[in-house]
Image (tube, rainbow, N blue to C red; front, side):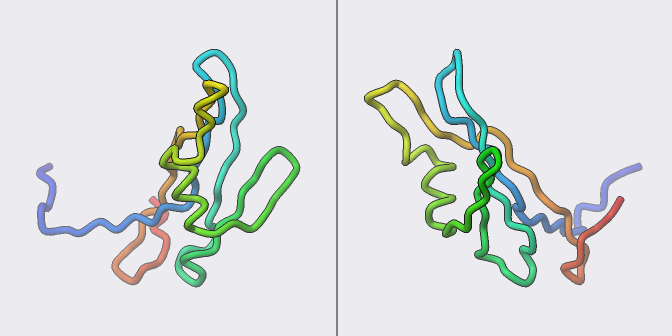
Amino acid sequence: PLLDTHEIHIYDLTSIVIHDGSLSSGHYTCFVRPDSSNFPNQWFEINDHMVSSVSETDVLAVASGKQSNRLSNRSKNAYMLLYEKKDNNNKICYE
């Protein structure tokens, strides 16, 4: 079937997996926004057993690679982005 080109799809970014390291080694952490509808700027960083509240500014700085350590040849960058699909009423769409 042909796709309806007039249909609008809305996605909310809910999680960002971060790789901190080099090509040969590293560590993964995750930023999570558990309720993007009610608290759009509330993010948490999950690092092993530690969970901390972080600002959206910090999330964007880390995910974009701006908090990399160039002297040690390590970098922090977004590795994977996870989204929730929303319906027309801004509710999570379960398909």
